[in-house]
Length: 338
Image 1 (tube, one colour):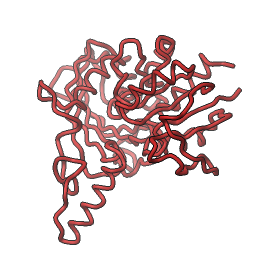
Image 2: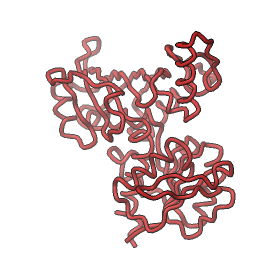
Image 3: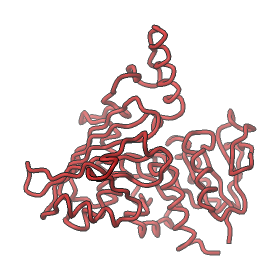
Image 4: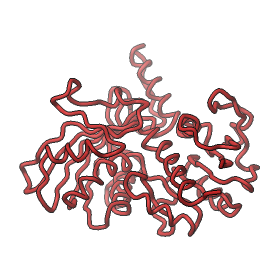
């Protein structure tokens, strides 16, 4: 059994990763299409040892396509995803547009795989935000063990989460500073090189950024409405990899040692304990890795039942492309059997 697959947004960071991971994991592809905007049409991208030409999204016919992996931006997804679904494809969308749609499942395979069944309502499945994905992967087994009441998370997010142009800006600004030139912010409101920016996405009426709002509402949709989430999201001058310091309050006791033991048995999580040679792990060290890495687990003595931990992941892989491919794998295993 094999499937016709289209990757929309194939010219971007996440699109490239989707093509790479489909090949790495031997996804049963009978036909692969790389699709993007007209300005990228005709350019070539890699799929394994082959080069394939990018096709124009505006002209692309989705008839006969089984699965679409999508990461072209929310506005574009809003327009094309329903068209692809109407043509018979199942769209796994990495943008923010469909995440809070009650008829679209929001899925992290390690956390709520059964939600995939709801894809039939609109033939669209949403990928959560990158920062949400890595956090809920770590939280789910702890939530099962002691039930989470409240989460306070501070994120340190790399520029790749804002796209290739943002990565270029970090590189160019850093070079400018070393050449005694004045860096010019374009992709970000303020200088990102050698700096930290406490704004990701737009500011909302309640003074949160939209990224902080996403982490709140998406966690509730995935793990449970009763969980309170306070997120503080910061853009930092790293190219790839998101880091989070997570504080969790539970309904009942769960010690740091018990939490570590639980996470060590959980698929998709790697635990780096203080007693190990590494002691803790940083974003640079996990680039290209698929797991969510947890370290610095410790008890929080300021509440009755609380823990703190450090959590890092490759935002282009588990935070985006890998999560989408994992959804596709479950989709063909359980629902699209030919």
